[in-house]
Amino acid sequence: MAKAKTSDPLEPYRQKRDFSRTAEPVGRVPVTEADGRRRFVVQRHRARRLHYDFRLEIDGVLVSWAVPKGPTLDPDVRRLAVHVEDHPLEYEWFEGIIPSGEYGGGDVIVWDRGTWEPHGTDDPGRAVRDGELHFDLTGERLLGRFALVRSGQSASSSAKEQWLLVHKHDRYAKKGWDPESLDTSVMSGRTNDEVKAAPDAVWHSDEPPSEAAHPVQGATGRPLSDEELDELAGLGAEGRWSVFGRTLRVTNLDKVLFPGRSGERAVTKRELLAYTARIAPVLLPYLRGRALNLHRYPDGADAKGFWHKEVPERAPAWLPRWDNPDADPGETRTYLVVDEPAALVWAAGFGALEWHPWTSPTRAPQCPDYALFDIDPGQQTSWPEVLELARLHRTAFEHLGIRAYPKLTGRRRLQVWVPISSGPGFDETREWVERVSRTVGAVLPELVSWKWQKSQRGGRARLDYTQNAVNKTLVAPYSPRPAPGAPVSAPITWEELDDPDLRPDRYTIRTVLERLEERGDVFRGVLAHDQVLPRVT
Ligand code: MN
Image 1 (cartoon, rainbow, N blue to C red):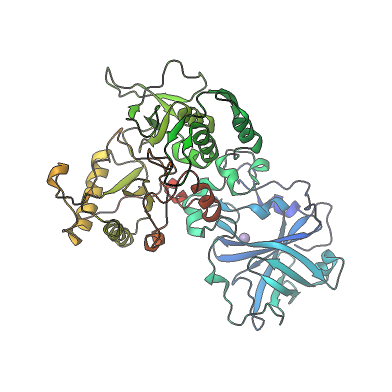
Image 2: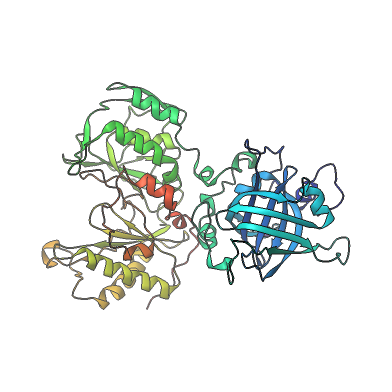
């Protein structure tokens, strides 16, 4: 509230929140950007009601209005803006969920952000107290001159003030402009639904709020530092590499592990380790708490690989691991669990070119929390036919009201992961996948074979539901595959099925990081295990 200045402008904000419960930032001494420009942010916030939080940096806090219909560039439209309490500057970066039952419970995306300048005053704090502020915004979506004008006295001292937000007639004005036609975050490219589906991805509640108040990547741990990357580049053929707080002995760094694609240089172990360390923080949420089966190719992708599951005795003591209580004598007992990024780097150094996590967590190894669909093309199946089968799956999931996430395998297949709440066993999950698959397959029977033996399939595709079994694994997102150029298993959106340039091995360890930077991680939604498999008859 814009009361006369209190000694601490954030006191009302603090009073509304119990910081032991809500993973929002505790207001700290704010730091204005070095270039001295004021920042603004607009967050699309789905709480009890959808609204846009319009926040301007003034005097070290984010002075805030809740705009139910959102800001607009249409100069003929006046938007109600309810003046709400100031927020700490760190909140500018907040994107994620606020737990239900708490103040503002719901999901938040950063809908726009940028810099702003007051117009006609040097003291915007005073202008706000006086009830009228004119300003210029330089955002990604909002541009040009706006005004905020107090429209009336509050009915009582506790009621919030009603203001109006308007865009002036200037060269940025656009008639009929609707903020709801832009429903993604300018920070991550994700929608509110996608952020809601995977709140872990953007906000780590087990970290102290002061450390969690960082860009989206903060959710997956810190990225690899330039120093760590430089250290690897500077090593000879072998040496000790300090990475993510661990020191690893790395050998044969210049050994070729993947032949190059035509016209490209081969991929060395050094390059694989660098990729692994860069992708590890992104991959961590998908691997944490799960046994990992390693597909090792110590002599490179051209040689024959083999499965390695047991953590070797000479492995470093700090490696996180899990003893499978259900292991029979002679079976693998102790599995690697990538609970920290350095563990994945160790695995790559150990020759694991492919990473295959279990579909059940170690805390409940008999209960999968993914249902897996695997479109396995036969010799006669063309890529457009694989895409046709994938589109049929999409339609099926839409009918069932199920969130499902496709990914390229980096080889010939296409997979779909469906996150589910832990509960049903593998048999039940497999039967459900089989029923959906058979329904899908019945639409294009000429493309699909249900024969177990490959030789009997007549070159047709298989919809392989049998991977839904304990200790069966599918390749992790972003895992390399043993093929020329080091292709990776890249998550895609359903819309990308219509991209004429899409190929199952389109992305490699050299290109997928750039894609992540541009698109964000489109697979994050699989981390929300909140779905119950609907009845399929
Ligand atoms: Mn809000």
